[in-house]
Length: 112
Image (tube, rainbow, N blue to C red; front, side, top):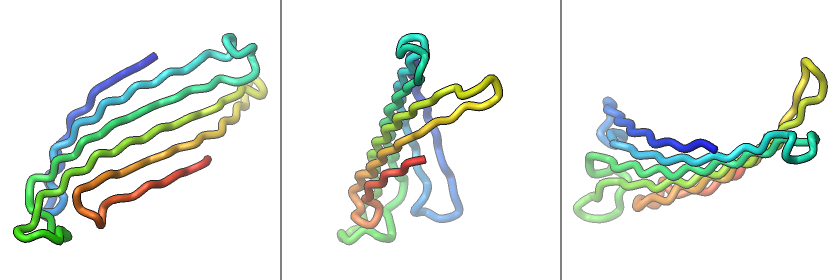
């Protein structure tokens, strides 16, 4: 198991992108010995809050509102050691960006 907290601050040349961010992450990995030696699964969950410092130019409200994003990301990875020198993995990522500014809302899914 693992867990963590990250604080980040982004100061840019464009007012739309200055923010303070807070991220919590939790992860769990099972060793191959628990799954019978066949595969090593891991799961990671992240929750990020980004609070932008200035009114956003894409805001449709008057006066323009400050952007706030809540980002959820979940990753599932299945890894397997094939030989002493070779291993392989399959990964699925689901990401949801919920924003109070419509132009920045999205869902995405990535398989790799």
